[in-house]
Image 1: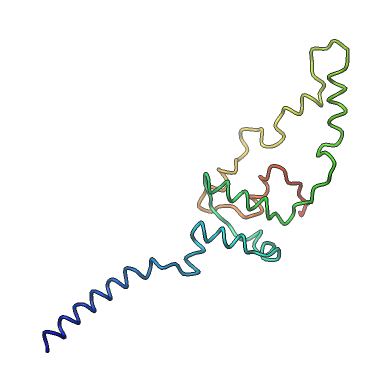
Image 2 (image 1 turned 30 degrees about the vertical axis):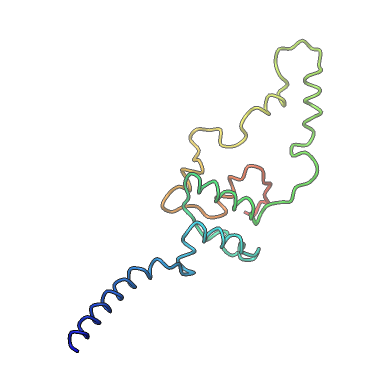
Length: 159
């Protein structure tokens, strides 16, 4: 009888140890938030008011492919994004492009407006920080800081 109790207590110890090993592997709602899949689900399920509440406080540190995905969410859910109009972004671009290509002045130079189209409009200075330098750090970036890098969003000035 005592031998049976000793055997049972040994198996209970083994079961307890196994349980302590397995329990941390079971995803909980809190643990799921810290995985990429959990964050994707959290971002997908947020309402507009949820985004407004976390936009300036919540920070995320992202690098490489995770940075691209984070930028997608920031651009998609930007609370200051203006809806696009049907007009061209820069107004009358086509008119001066046609004018500069059809002018028979014999000039070898491009029209200044046409030439400016080939220049980078943002962050062309090498000293300005990049999104990687800003957000791939321990502190990370807020959603607002990510949204500043959205390539095509027109944003409301909220300052």
